Length: 184
Image (cartoon, rainbow, N blue to C red; front, side, top):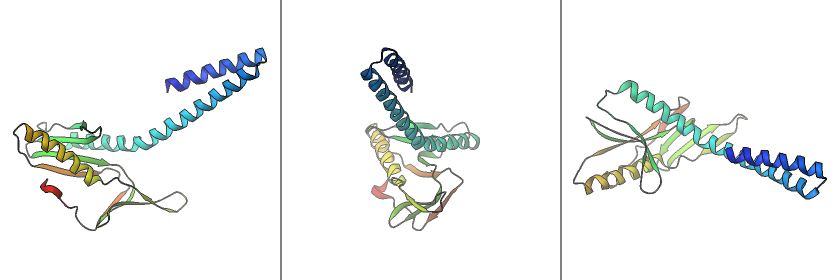
């Protein structure tokens, strides 16, 4: 965001100087700088729109876990994996180790033989189908990596996988339970 502000201020300064000196090239490049600033801002805004609901869902889970669980559970959020991804929450405690994937989607969330599907109604009344990126697959990938790491340390432990939908506007429709692949 700081870069956008700097580029915009410089462009406005150059534009003013270009008009003062009656220099068409300076005016052209300053207007180009302002347009680039606008495009950078639009891209930043859309990235925020993409990731903010996910962060909101993790915040809801964090508050819920804090209010429900005793102190002998420790929640780790944004637990990094080796391939640049992360697990939304890893929760070790007396009853076991949990890998939790948080989703904050709205609409009908359906799991069937065809996998995960999101169906929602837009403001105009049209039906939209969203991509959920296979949340159970994300959990299994996290479980697999943690399990390999623990086994390399001589620890053989069952790891529980959980997908949590935090948005109250989500209606979950489970037509067939997720398969537990690879014995994880």
